[in-house]
Image (cartoon, rainbow, N blue to C red; front, side, top):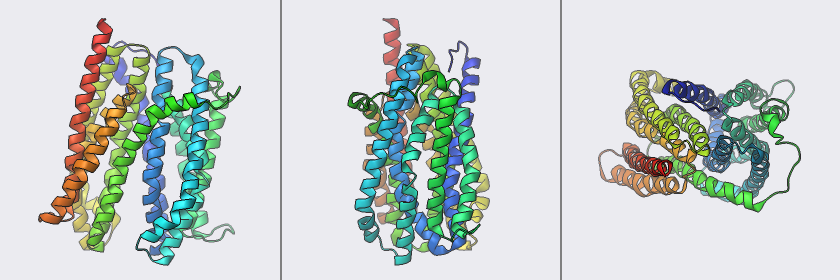
Length: 452
């Protein structure tokens, strides 16, 4: 990161940060897609087992990752304030915390995995695959959380291309390991869907080791000495990260878990309807990587400027992000409208599923309009370290407004399953408006501070 003085310089720096983040996020999302698609090539039972396991894992992973994301604004503000001597301690404490969180997740999984799967109306074989897919994947949780902490440190310095390179290396490796362990190649037994969990865990270990090597050996990271002269774990520093990270984590958990809740509520409809819903959500989630990446880039840029007390520059980056969100929303809506036939056919050859998927995609156009506006603003607020209000807004907009509205529309109007999508659209729209109000309030607050 570096200081900029003109709008052109800001746009250039912001784009330099954003594009690698976008490629990284899309590549990470593709890993999950390849796990599911390649498992489906083994059998329908393997596909169902991995899909169930993934639906349980993703909200938990997203929530924990939100906690780890707190490192980004913390480091960005320290670098902006030229307090680089404090960076090493923050990163080391973040690594300690990531290991602690991984252990908690793993122990919680041991206690609740069987009861949760038993509550679901699953065939015994599907339940078996889902269980051991998650157990296999669990072997890579610790390195995954360490990697995410290191990635936040790398990105906070504006070196987002490094994270991109690591993930671009790991994606083909993940596909190769899936091929080996799912289908049983090179003398390895065929594990089916469980093999995708093994492959993912191995990939997590590899990306962690690569990130550790880069941070230890390559400039500018090695100048911070984050992997040498280790300090003792500090509850005080953990509290600082958790104070920022927990609200981010809960906000992201509320956002991702609502889709799992809607999927469960839609189980009363036909298999074709559920399949079409999942297909549309899957593609819309891929498009969501764009505004999510804009938000992550804003966290870095605004955090850096706030750390240097350049509040006017932070406000300009906020406007760049909001403008980008609007452009992205229009572009993504156009893509969805023009490609709905192709997208629907990509997920299924069944004509009824294709027609239903196309209908869901039309709702997804409005769905992503609100998301593409709100996600960049969330990232901007994280740059200000303003996370508590975002957490409250996420809970209210998704679970108090969105889900009940969807349930009412689905059960008491002719919309039926599409009612849940309308409910989510309403919730996301309310959340986006509230987030914009909060950002404008903070910008005015910091503008007054710059005058004083």
